[in-house]
Amino acid sequence: MPVKFYSRWHIAPAHKLFRKPLQPILIRTPSLKSRSNKPLAMNTEELLNILTYYHLQDFSSGRELLQALEEDDYARKFVSPVNGVKRSTFFDTVNDRGVEQLLFVFTELQKQATGILPSQYLELGDLVAIDGSLINGVLSMHWADYRTNSKKAKLHFGLDLNHGIPRKLFLTEGNGAERPFVSQIIEPGQTGVLDRGYQAHHLFDQWQLDGCHFVCRIKESTHKDILEEYTEQEDSHIFFDAKVLLGTPNANQTKEPVRLVGYVIEGKKYWVATDRYDLSAEQVALVYKLRWDVESFFAWWKRHLNVYHLFARSENGLMVQILSGLITYLLLAIYCHEQHGETVSIRRVRELRTQIRNEALQQVERQATAQKEKRQPRIKRRKRQKRPHAKF
Image: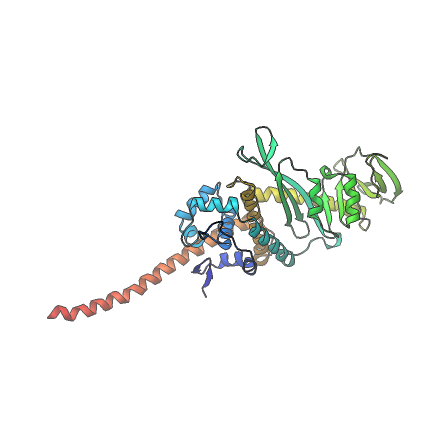
């Protein structure tokens, strides 16, 4: 049965399945608001439809996207608003609005995905890998300070390791400090998994006071005062496990003791500080190893969903682009799990692209055929009515 979708009546099963998780969320999403008496040319749903289409397809710029919305039959009929979208309208909307709406959609969709996708490491707790990623900008992005003659923005990001999906994000200029965002990304009871760039002894104390856990690699040269040593298993890659105070006394030493685990992988030593005494030393090492999942996510996400092919220059516009890219990934994660029982892969993304396009083109052909058949009886009736008059 046809369903109303973006002000169009059509049947596109793959597109419907892909977008289905958004339906209950969009009903509650705040509306885009006009900043003048002139009504908006597109609503939140239409904006999100355009942006998720951008990330699904292999576009290299916003101009290429808009050209497709104008010239491609599928994009014009099923992605663009009914009356089309002008270039100025699209870029004005992206650069000045949409963050509130997309942030709401992202937050609600992330909660939905957490309830649908299986949890992989229940025995290790609620793990969140935290990392920062630089985004190359242009000189006109005055807000994105980095270096002289170089503009970059920085994305501060948390990845839910149990479900393999994004959790929280913050955007700053390229010089933005990373450590302060840890407390905003992890919640009490969660475990932040961090590289050694996040090592800060006063924050180790603060996180413990806040009830937030951490597994953080530290520099090998860090001073260690051993308070209690734990037994290590024989024939294990673990060579150190103890309760310690980190840092130089009367300078930067931790006030609260932490657990320090040392282990060797392929001849390379790792020192990992944590407040998780409930885990074995091997599990602590495993938790830190899982941190590399956030690196894999960034690499896949940027490469295959064109997140950093910038079509916006303002801070608002860049945040809209990033949020829409994360929303697209969450939709893909739910779709791949429910339809294929798999995690997201480029193979499934390409398959979905092809399926949506084929179904859309078939629908256009069916509509054209139906309209043609509907007109034919009228033509015949007109001919029969004219024949008697021709005899007189």
